[in-house]
Length: 564
Image (cartoon, rainbow, N blue to C red; front, side, top):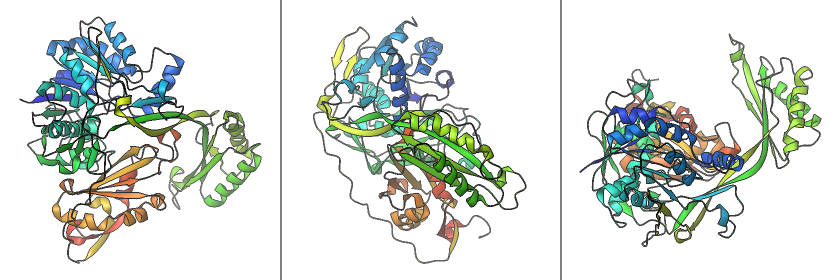
């Protein structure tokens, strides 16, 4: 018997109408939503500092106010991690809607009060990633809505599936299948064509529909979407999402370590992709902890440089600014972005950008004095000086780090609709997480003529942030292409193609079933997305940059018409 689980949110701020669209668009058993990310926990932490009753995703409450009656009428149960730092507060707010729904919540992930004792320092937020068994307990008690704090993204899908089929803690293959299905749909429309390298091949990208996982009792699943919605579900779109924010073939969760390297994808009809064969192993003995701290204060400004002598203009502005500052901040970074073209026919295409970013623990050093000096350059610097926007007075920024604590130190608790508090024991059988041995590579292709073209001529990519690191998953669509990719795209080659990674540690993981190689680039994002250490702080475009870089591809693979 299949259970049909839909998703209506991939992040805090996603399409507000998605809950209604999913409930009205077709049949579902459960509707889930992922509202949390590393940056979101920092945002909610700051909300909670202003108002202790907040700390949850307010957009979910708005969606529930609009749709909870409809969900009850259709018999659809809702599971979401929108509780953030205050699942109890969100549950109480949902009760006030007076819908008649039975509300339950899961808590225990918030370790802030014990952070120092657990060796986690003194962060602003400290939340362990919980698994899905608290959700199972709530659903088994008859809950219509379950809200959680920081569970893993896949747990909001694993929980309903495990409840529906009565899985046990040691049903690792089934649990792993649910984790993989959950990982595919938890980012919403990224599974249906959003952020997809080959988006030009999708007929209707006007408004991609949200994804659905039809999970079976053995953990295998079909990924699909409601009929008549935009976007597409293909082996390509599902592969792209599977590669998002992972490392190697082992994908650790609190309830199971899913072997992503064993998952097999097959097209099962129009907008239907079957995922089968996923193996599972016992989870690691520790839980990951999301730690957000105040890193200091930052400010920035960007000037426009137009026409001739771009580098000389940038040098003058930098020299003037730094010499005029009353006191230099601890960090001062300059970036010259050469967007200008010679003999340009518009002023915009004749212009470059000079960006200056400052950070310091003292807000005064990146505040008014920093902004004032930038403005004072207006009539005293290079010809054509202008700012893209007036500089601000600075703002605090956060730093994300990951910690780990023994699972038994986390008081995972299900609070049932009648108020009963049920402790959830950690999994008794665990296995230390270890990297897999490198798989056997396909036989290299024979030597043949090549053509120098962008990697993206034949390869797709998906990239994202994991703390201060980033991953870039690259995949192709045929065995012949993979036989080339697996040998050609080495860590050394990636460092050449992405000079920002040249001095960083880059690790490659080969995933033959997905015809993919995944690269983890350590430290490329500095102290994480909130510190905004680079132009693309979440590494969302890193994969597309790699695809745009030129590489020698065999002519027989790169052929797309006339050879170039």
